Length: 336
Image 1 (cartoon, one colour):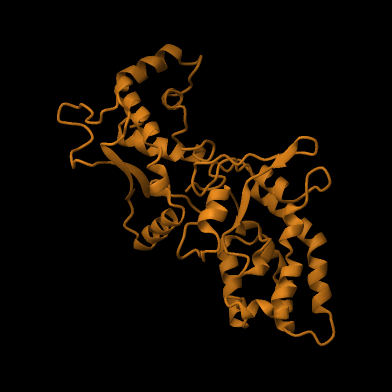
Image 2 (tube, rainbow, N blue to C red; image 1 turned 135 degrees about the horizontal axis):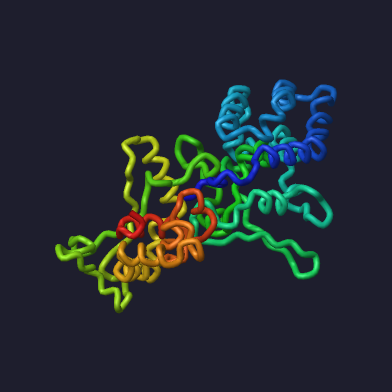
């Protein structure tokens, strides 16, 4: 899992303001209208939503968690099927109408799901780092964008259906097929706007024979010429002593089937192993000195060219399998 906007090149505050402006024009009037009706039930709830509207729309994930707690104390809980038949639930779905957001296209509207995903600059699914989710919107040739997952599921928290930091651009596999309607919280899972797996949870090679990856003479014990990958498995290695963080990392990996799916990329890993043999430190240094100032500005540039992927934390969200490349190349000693 990769943190969104890890290089901080996107001005999130600017996007928050655009989203808030949209919400105040398209959705706030609906909330105000309902709250002003004579004899309206749950007046206290509507007043709370009005008084905390800005935080509801652009509040960071921790703020959203606090809003959930406050509303639950007021009796706002939509866990059961019967609770979704209440007028309060139906009113919230009407006010925080997600369909309005996803049906707005750049040709006719300034802000909507397409603009949100595009300007956020998320081109790779942050949950799996395996799928590109480029945004394309052309009235003549068609349109496509990544799915938008609700970290806090909108079926239980309809008032968060349009909250900026509850909208996670992702691939269809992660959003619909794997996460679906599962309950997520900051205490149980990793939130991509706050953190990624980083170096706390890294990919690692485990030899099935129980041997080490390299023998005492530094020779790789994988039959990389055949490239079968049958001699090893890919697993996650936890590098933190924080048990709560470890639980969130493990839970997130399990939901998105990351261990199982990444073990289907063994051919890619075998290529990394080959490159670790072909390009020892001396060869990398030689290439850097030969092309310094022409092709490369740093030794890292050489390594990224050889791996055809990024290896720095701040760039892992730019290309698929980047975290896998970074973690395994470090384990193989390529980037040390």
